Image (tube, rainbow over all chains, first blue to last red; front, side, top):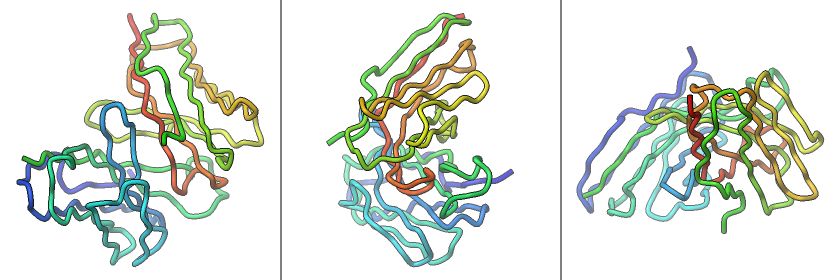
Length: 118
Length: 114
């Protein structure tokens, strides 16, 4: 069964801490994404990557950075956690390009990490 | 600036009836649209998609309609079942296949009443 695995389901961190959220996929997908989900705001894109060592800012990159040293792993880093970064964080991956089965389209999501910053 | 909008935060439907979830978008560069379903404590899962060259796509109980001139799409579920109770997100892509950067709506919580 293909998977996107996020290292933690629940995380509690203190304000000012450096926080690492890890995401690993086993589908050989080229594309990887980090979103956060907040009530009333839906899913908002933080950062994405279409290739190893490549990264692009999404819609809300402030306060975050990412690392993609290997194809299967995409890490989200909160440089100095703040209470407004309390959220559900979702990692996703997808194939690059088109063609193939319809099931290849769209993302496969991980189960999410609920981060609380106190 | 919310480029993809789901104006109904919640919807309740009787089991067996039709559920209609709506989504509006503002960016005319969007070319591919998807619906995702999300249960609590799980990641969203892909449900159905539609390319801008079509106005309808059907998969079993799920049908998505696209009205490009109105920048509006809708998801029809018929008949609705209790397992359909979840949050539904509409998403849009400026790419052709929906596997690139997606912009999501705010979600609609669907409750199916037995």
